[in-house]
Length: 196
Image (cartoon, rainbow, N blue to C red):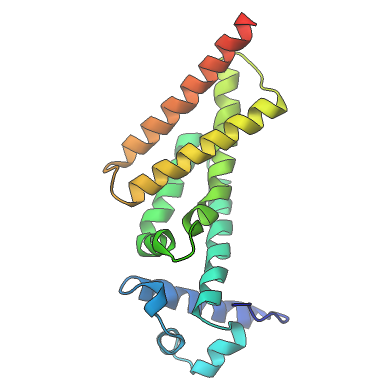
C-alpha cells in the first residue's frame, strides 16, 4: 500500500482533494473495504487509470486522507482562544465528517481514529494542563507537564471515542467531564506540591 510519490503540481493536489472527497462521500454508504477504485474515480468524473497516477489503491488514498485530516484539525485549533473553544471546534470537525470518523474507528487496522485525533488532543491537553496549573498557583516541571499532557490526551481520546460511538449523548458531557478532570488534576498537583 505504498503511495506513489512524484513532484506534485497544484492541479495534482486538487485532484487528490477531489479523490479524498469522493472517498469520504462513499464512506457514508459503505465500509472502506467494500469501496473500489472504479467507484472513487467515477465520482470524480475520471478514468480508473487516472486514480493510479495519484495512489496505488483505495487504502493509500485513505492513508493520505488521514494525514490531511490530522493536519486540518491542528490548523483549525490554532485559531481558538480557549480550551473549551478548541474542544468544541474539534468536535464540530468530527461531527461534520462523522461517517469518515466512524470509518476510521472501525478500520481493520486499529488505532486509525487515535492517529488522526492524537495531535490535536495533545495540543489541547498541553494547553489545558498549563492553564489549570497556573490557575492553581503552580508551575509544572517539564516531566510533570509531559506526564499530565499524556494522561489528559488519553482521557480526551477515550471521551471522543465514547462520544463518537454514542455512549455520550450530549457534547456538554464530554466538555464538562474532561475539563473537570483537568481542573482537579491541577488542584491535586498544587496541593501535593504545597505538602512537600
